[in-house]
Image 1 (cartoon, helix red, strand yellow):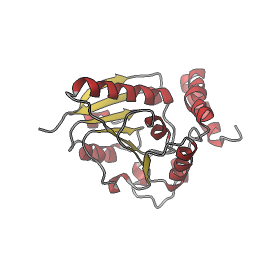
Image 2 (tube, rainbow, N blue to C red; image 1 turned 90 degrees about the vertical axis):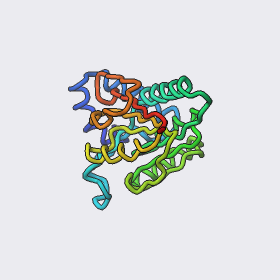
Image 3 (cartoon, helix red, strand yellow; image 1 turned 120 degrees about the vertical axis):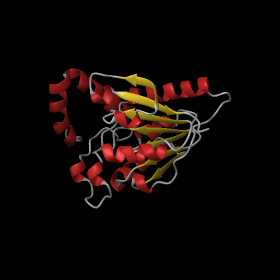
Image 4 (cartoon, one colour; image 1 turned 30 degrees about the horizontal axis):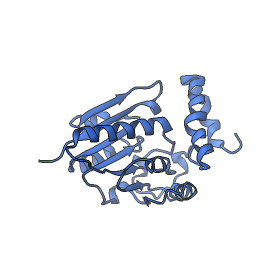
Length: 224
C-alpha cells in the first residue's frame, strides 16, 4: 500500500461497488502484469495532479491501466477479423490513443502490427512509458507526447485503442477524424460514449461486471 498511495483511494470504492472480485482483478490484471514484466503501469494518476496548462485537460480523464486480458482479447479479435475479411494478408498499424504508461504498447509487440504508436499528452506519463518500454525491450514503439488534436499520423489500415480517455465532445472529434479512412478498427474500452460510433460496424461487444471490462470493437470498411 505504501508503494501505491492512489490505491488507498481506489480500492474502497471498487470493493463497495463490485466486491472482492474487483480487487482480485487488480492483483491479476494490473499488479500481475507489472510483476511479470518489471514495469510500473498499475498505479492510478488522478487528473487533479496533471499540469494545468495541458491543452484539452478539461476534456480528458486521469490515468488507469486497462486490464491485460481485455487488451489481449481485443487484439486477438481484431487480428482474426482482419484475416477473415481481407482477400490478401494485410498488416495493420497500431495506435494507442491516450497511451499512459505504455501497457498496451508493450502487449502490442506480441502481435504482427506493422508499426506501434502511442499518443499521450502528459509528459510525466510519457517518461514512465519510455522506462517501461526500455525495461521490456519494446523498441518498435514510437511515442508521441502531444495532444491528440496535434497528432497528424491518422490513416487507413490501423487499429486504434482507447480506454475512455476523453469526454464526449473530444471523442466525437477523434472519431470524425479517424472515420475519414478505410479498414480501420477502433477498440473502445469502457465505451461511455458508444453512440459516437453508431455509424460504424460493431464487430464485438463485451459487457463485464464493471466498466473496465466493457469493450466495444468497431470497424470501418475500405473507402470506395
